Picture 1 (cartoon, helix red, strand yellow):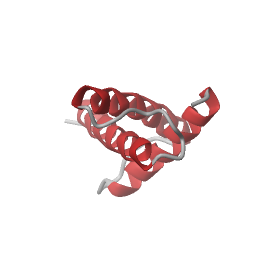
Picture 2 (picture 1 turned 180 degrees about the vertical axis):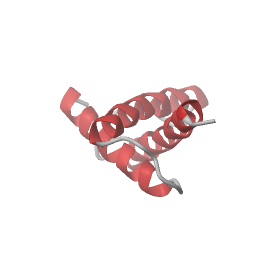
Picture 3 (picture 1 turned 90 degrees about the vertical axis):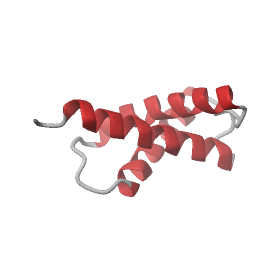
Picture 4 (picture 1 turned 30 degrees about the vertical axis):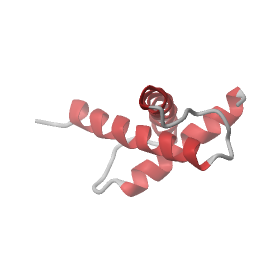
Amino acid sequence: MGFLAFLLLGLIAGAIAKAILPGKQSGGWVSTLILGVVGALLGGWIGSLLGLGSVDSFFSIGTWLLAIGGSILVILLWGLITRKR
């Protein structure tokens, strides 16, 4: 998968992850892109460790599920780190 396709995957996966998670997450589309790309990387890494697959093809449902799952995890962790106490 090319660099621009991976950025698009991260942006869309981050937006879907923000829509799935309840509550209000801060940040605009740039933070969504960054968290989505980090989440896609994390999801692909965890998926390859567990033998579930990797983030190889843009049009694979497994790629999207791993990217969205990783994005949800990253957004949750980011919310815990930046939460006001």
